[in-house]
Structure formats: structure tokens, C-alpha cells
Amino acid sequence: MNKSGIDHVRLVEVGPRDGLQNEPEKTTVAFRVELVDRLSACGLKTIEVGSFVSPKWVPKMANTAEVLNSVGRYEDVSLVALVPNIRGMIDAIASNVDEVAIFSAASETFSQRNTNCSIEQSFERFQPVLEKAREIGVPVRGYVSCVLGCPYEGKISASQVVPIVNRLIESGCYEVSLGDTIGVGTVNSTRELLRAVEGAIGLESIAVHFHDTYGQALPNIVTALEQGVSTVDSSIGGLGGCPYARGASGNVATEDVVYMLDGMGVESGVNLNDLLKVSEFVFSHLKRPPTSRVANALLNASVH
Picture (cartoon, rainbow, N blue to C red):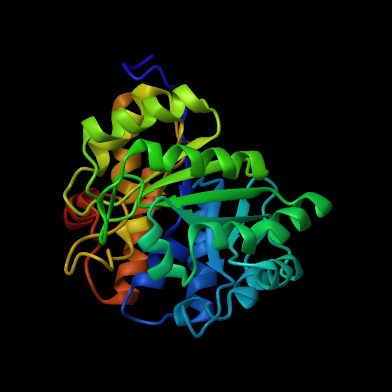
């Protein structure tokens, strides 16, 4: 047993959705399908495939239905789609999605700027989604953005985050992912937040989603494991920038997380060598190097 006390971590791969939607280049359906299929073959069990947000707002996620209808299906791999409202939910169901994700924020200003509605209005929008999910037995995952800091409001306190998380769980989300959207979190602020969440709700249904803007994602993940969190979001190659910090990296790279977990003796079920081949495939297509430190080190050394 390692110091964290956690012996297995479930990774949620967000590259095909949260990653690609922030990439400057638009990608084809065929590329997105191959990416998801390759990720499934690496041992990842939860993969965020795309979103059913209007293409007017997120053009790079257009044709998510076509992607879901074309990817390979494996019994032990859950394919997730982000849905903003009941219309998105109906489209997702028609595409035979395994589970859906809904999103809120701990910052009122961010909610207004990002979704053109207040936090309260966002809950009103996805109540029909939750009702439909209960009716047909589709699991729902919740996201909370800006849990450690907001580009408009600055530092976010745990007292702003806990009620949102609690409400999502009480509404029927099986899990809530805490998102450090602009990557400003540190070990201390991460620990403080998770202790507050644990005291009010517990951590059994909590995941973490760190951006690596200031290079703090991996230490923050270790801190989360030490607190008892065992589900971590990550993105192949560090796909996706941070739209609120010009030139900054975005999601923590799946390869970096797997390399770290392997070194800690924590099982993830993901094969690092296979993952590196997926990273090579993605970034040769995008014609740029991955953000992942591990991918750059091992691929440049021709270690597969």
C-alpha cells in the first residue's frame, strides 16, 4: 500500500470532448472515432466522447451523435456525453450513450459568462435531464467548474463549492467532478477544499479534474488521493488549452498521471505503452507536440 492508502484509481478520459473542443483545429468524425477506439483499447473504462451542446456555441463538438454511432462498443467501457438541457439529453439517448454529464459552476460570474445563465437557472435547465435519466436508468455525472479559482471572481471558497456539490448529488448524480478550471489550485487549497467536502458530504462520490496551468496538477492529484479520492479526470497528451489563460496548458495529461500512478504502485488498469502510441497518433494528426511531459520524454527517446 502506498502513502495515499489508495490502491486503485479510476481514470476518466476527457480528451475527446474537453480536450478537442479547446484545440484550434477542427477534427473529422473519422479521427474522433479512431481516437475513442484507441483509448478504449488502452484499458480506460470511462471516456468522454463529446457533447450535445449546440454547434453554434461549440462547433468542434458537432457530429457527436455520428461519433457515438460509429465507435466500437465494449461491455466494460462507458461512453459519456455532456448534455446542457433536455434537448441534448434526447439526442444523447438516441445515440445510445452509456452515461451523460451535466455541468454547473461555483462562480456566479463564470456561470453567466460560460452558459448565459445563473447557477440557479443551470439547475432548472438540467432538472428534466435528471428526471429523464432516472426514468430510463442512464447514470448522470456532474461537473462543478472553478472550484479553486475563477477568472472573473478570483479565489473561490469551499463554502461556495460544497452546496453545489451537495445539490448535484441529491439531484441524482452518481459522481461529481471538482474542476480546477484555470489551474490555480495548490496542495494546500486542494486539501482545504476536499476536507470541507468530506466533512459535509463525504468523498465516495467525488472525482477531481485539474488543469495544469501552473504545473500543479500532479501534486494536487496526489493530495486528492491522500484525502481519499479515487477518481481522476485526465486528457490524452494534455489535449486542450486553458481558454482563460492565454498560452497556458489545460488538462493534465493522462500519460503523466498513469506514469505517476505506476510509480506509486497504484493500479489504473491503463497500459502506458499503448497510451503513448495513442498520443503519437493524436499529435501527429494535430501536427504539434503533446503537452504531456511523459509523452515528450518517452516518444523522443523512442521508448514504446
